[in-house]
Image 1 (cartoon, rainbow, N blue to C red):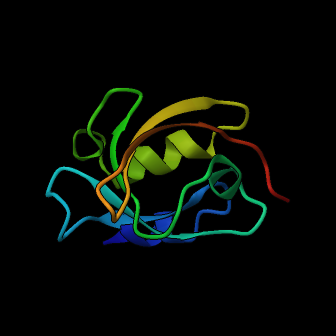
Image 2: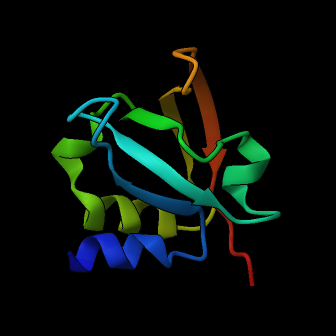
Length: 98
Protein backbone atom coordinates (compact mmCIF):
# COMPACT_ATOMS: atom_id res chain seq x y z
CA UNK A 1 0.00 0.00 0.00
CA UNK A 2 2.76 2.46 0.77
CA UNK A 3 4.14 2.16 -2.77
CA UNK A 4 0.71 2.84 -4.25
CA UNK A 5 0.27 5.88 -2.05
CA UNK A 6 3.72 7.22 -2.96
CA UNK A 7 3.04 6.83 -6.68
CA UNK A 8 -0.30 8.59 -6.35
CA UNK A 9 1.41 11.70 -5.01
CA UNK A 10 4.37 11.75 -7.36
CA UNK A 11 4.79 15.31 -8.66
CA UNK A 12 6.80 14.11 -11.65
CA UNK A 13 4.52 12.08 -13.91
CA UNK A 14 1.06 10.91 -12.93
CA UNK A 15 -0.64 8.46 -10.64
CA UNK A 16 -0.77 4.77 -11.41
CA UNK A 17 -2.48 1.88 -9.72
CA UNK A 18 -2.70 -1.82 -10.48
CA UNK A 19 -5.20 -2.46 -13.24
CA UNK A 20 -8.10 -4.55 -12.07
CA UNK A 21 -10.23 -4.75 -15.20
CA UNK A 22 -7.84 -4.44 -18.14
CA UNK A 23 -5.18 -6.98 -17.17
CA UNK A 24 -3.44 -8.21 -14.07
CA UNK A 25 -0.16 -7.42 -15.84
CA UNK A 26 -0.62 -3.69 -16.46
CA UNK A 27 -0.84 -0.48 -14.45
CA UNK A 28 -3.66 2.02 -14.95
CA UNK A 29 -3.19 5.77 -15.08
CA UNK A 30 -5.54 7.26 -12.48
CA UNK A 31 -4.75 10.92 -13.22
CA UNK A 32 -2.35 13.17 -15.07
CA UNK A 33 -1.29 16.54 -13.73
CA UNK A 34 -1.77 19.64 -15.86
CA UNK A 35 1.42 20.63 -17.69
CA UNK A 36 3.14 17.44 -16.53
CA UNK A 37 5.34 15.22 -18.70
CA UNK A 38 2.52 12.64 -18.67
CA UNK A 39 0.00 15.12 -20.06
CA UNK A 40 2.50 16.42 -22.62
CA UNK A 41 3.25 12.86 -23.76
CA UNK A 42 -0.46 12.23 -24.26
CA UNK A 43 -1.20 9.85 -21.39
CA UNK A 44 -4.85 9.82 -20.34
CA UNK A 45 -6.75 8.74 -17.26
CA UNK A 46 -7.68 5.10 -17.73
CA UNK A 47 -4.74 4.23 -19.99
CA UNK A 48 -3.25 0.84 -19.15
CA UNK A 49 0.55 0.84 -19.15
CA UNK A 50 1.57 -2.56 -20.53
CA UNK A 51 5.34 -2.05 -20.62
CA UNK A 52 7.95 0.47 -19.51
CA UNK A 53 11.06 0.21 -21.67
CA UNK A 54 9.91 -3.27 -22.70
CA UNK A 55 9.36 -4.52 -19.13
CA UNK A 56 5.90 -5.31 -17.74
CA UNK A 57 5.16 -3.01 -14.78
CA UNK A 58 4.32 -5.92 -12.47
CA UNK A 59 7.95 -7.07 -12.71
CA UNK A 60 9.12 -3.66 -11.45
CA UNK A 61 6.66 -2.88 -8.66
CA UNK A 62 5.17 0.50 -7.82
CA UNK A 63 8.09 1.78 -5.73
CA UNK A 64 10.59 0.99 -8.49
CA UNK A 65 8.36 2.72 -11.06
CA UNK A 66 8.08 5.72 -8.72
CA UNK A 67 11.89 5.88 -8.39
CA UNK A 68 12.38 5.55 -12.16
CA UNK A 69 9.94 8.34 -12.99
CA UNK A 70 11.41 10.59 -10.32
CA UNK A 71 14.74 10.76 -12.16
CA UNK A 72 14.95 14.02 -14.10
CA UNK A 73 15.86 14.01 -17.77
CA UNK A 74 15.18 10.32 -18.37
CA UNK A 75 13.24 9.12 -21.37
CA UNK A 76 10.99 6.08 -21.15
CA UNK A 77 9.16 4.16 -23.84
CA UNK A 78 5.69 3.14 -22.68
CA UNK A 79 3.41 0.67 -24.40
CA UNK A 80 -0.11 1.81 -23.54
CA UNK A 81 -3.59 0.47 -24.22
CA UNK A 82 -6.47 2.95 -24.28
CA UNK A 83 -9.96 2.20 -23.00
CA UNK A 84 -11.03 1.80 -26.63
CA UNK A 85 -8.41 -1.01 -26.95
CA UNK A 86 -6.13 1.13 -29.16
CA UNK A 87 -2.46 0.34 -28.47
CA UNK A 88 0.12 3.11 -28.55
CA UNK A 89 3.81 3.59 -27.94
CA UNK A 90 4.44 6.79 -26.00
CA UNK A 91 7.80 8.41 -25.28
CA UNK A 92 7.84 10.07 -21.90
CA UNK A 93 10.64 12.40 -20.82
CA UNK A 94 10.79 13.18 -17.11
CA UNK A 95 11.51 16.62 -15.73
CA UNK A 96 11.10 18.59 -12.54
CA UNK A 97 7.73 20.30 -12.21
CA UNK A 98 8.57 22.73 -9.43
